[in-house]
Image 1 (spheres, helix red, strand yellow):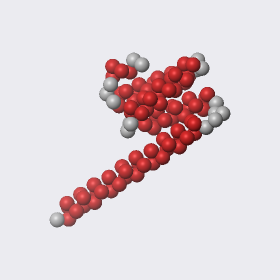
Image 2 (cartoon, rainbow, N blue to C red):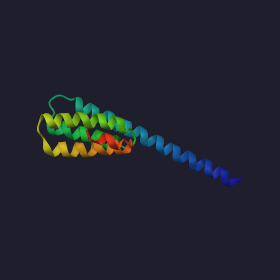
Image 3 (tube, rainbow, N blue to C red):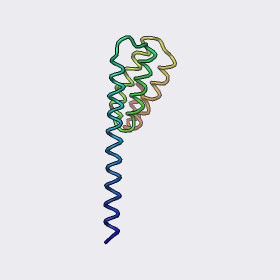
Image 4 (cartoon, rainbow, N blue to C red):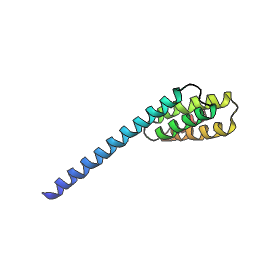
Length: 107
């Protein structure tokens, strides 16, 4: 009798922990988006923010991560910023990996 009760408790704790993590991640994404919308931020900072958004979403919302990656890639190409272009291509590829869309990695 005690064993099912313990299992229910463990499941409840696990679900609560996952919910808290998702909420914290959503807050972080919102915060980074607000930072990206600010005026007068450098291109370097914009690229860093796109990468951060891509990085924190690739496991749980890879489709959103890909969109952030594409925006960052477009900006890096426009600015001819090879370092960030390399980083953003790599991290965008990871989002495709998490979606198991291996053939789409050829951006």
